[in-house]
Length: 268
Image (tube, rainbow, N blue to C red; front, side, top):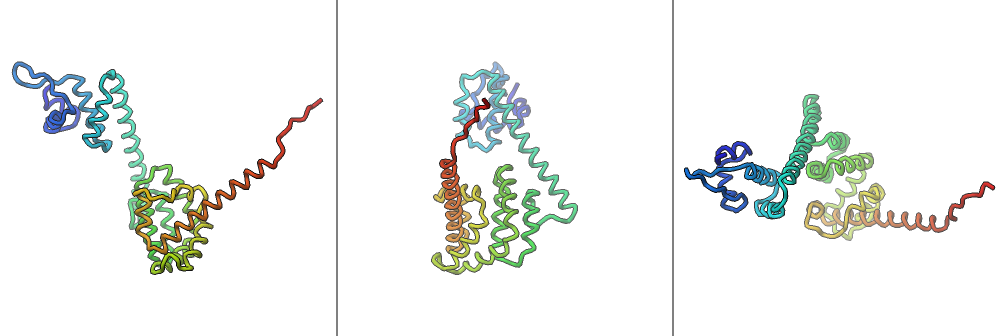
């Protein structure tokens, strides 16, 4: 195969192939007597591997590291990994199409929210929150939920939305307490009231997911977007929920220690 043929086969441009040669990702094949490069099956496999890795979001330096680990492996191993990469891509595409189908149904029924496209779980949750009075905190909450809906894995997203659905009936009271803290200091008495109310609604497993330590990630960005008193109230609520969970665990442990061991009665 010549460069144009292998590029067309793998779905890249000849320019990309030459770029990979320059970076040392794809070794240049020996030129024939006529001066043309002649590519073989192993070149095609390697080029396909580079394409799949870049499509998975790896930078070219990272691709180089992965390819270095591939050296010395049998062709069947590399092909198997390529097949697994394709399978993961197919799964992602299938999930996106399923979400798109649900959104199309909502759009055709005139029920699509302004924050769309969203998952069916969040669409249903926001439908209830939209009935609340105007609240700056509610608007901010919807924006955060839309962000989480985009970046969270499907299983985590479904679990989170199910948890929040159980809290929705108290949302009006909660938003009111947090809105009142928008221009307050972190030591305002309202922080304690809001934290206690929120802690009572927070499920133990949801609170346990917050480490409480800065990580430079999404959680820090969310808290930074809150007013100081609001951030203090949410942090304190999480700590209260964690202490509650710890107290339950200690109580259960003491109960188990006091319970007499089970003894099987001798039937004779």
